[in-house]
Length: 236
Length: 111
Image (cartoon, rainbow over all chains, first blue to last red; front, side):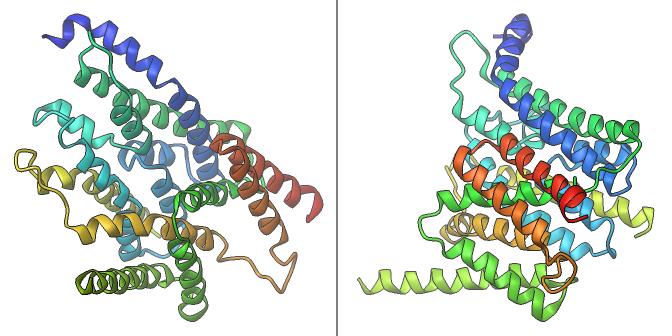
């Protein structure tokens, strides 16, 4: 079937499905744009970062890094671990997304959390072209996020002032994401390790390298735990 | 950081973030139904909570418990954010509530 013949249909269905994301992305995007304005950046920064990086938590983190010493190792490692979950979105989408073509590239580039949730869990009814709906949802979500970030940056300049305390939005975002993770965990070994190891590294190593050291220690801790469990399996 | 270094930082983050989305499609072929190694799958389940609590600590790295306002606005607003999110699990609601409390605290209570 040629997807272009029922383009309006697929688009309308995608638009309706993505409405909750419109609300969430616009709000957080505007918050992110305002946050970057507060840090002293022109609206071009949040807009271009939203368009190129396209990952909320990474963008907040990078905005912060831009004000510190150039530290490519931290940027690389932190972006990789923050994006690690997306690797598994890709694994889940292997059988759902087309094998090649421009649509495949769009779908992979825009594989953010919310887009994955919609494209993976929402069952596209018969009569619609599933891939076309997925592509529209991906494009719409991307558009919401970039527009929100741009509006936030512009709003910041229009207000012509910094809102003292607005920078707490980044802390609040990570607290919410942490609460979500803690509620999902079976044991709290991971969340507690993250907190304790980071605190100890911060005190012992200082602000420049503590994140990198924490990440290495967390992977080492997991490797020991994994190896230990393997040993137990073999003994059984 | 110079503008050049800022551009490099953003480009690096963009490339790495894209790679985390793209790699599965390079590493695994659909036909053989390949999957990542169990170690990687398990690590992917173990890390996310630790990364998030790590980033919360990262956000609090600058506060001084022994001077000024002892980090009280940050700690109070943080607890309120966590409480709101535990209660309603509505991201927009918790972010708005927590950030507004912090803005009020630093502008009118601890100023």
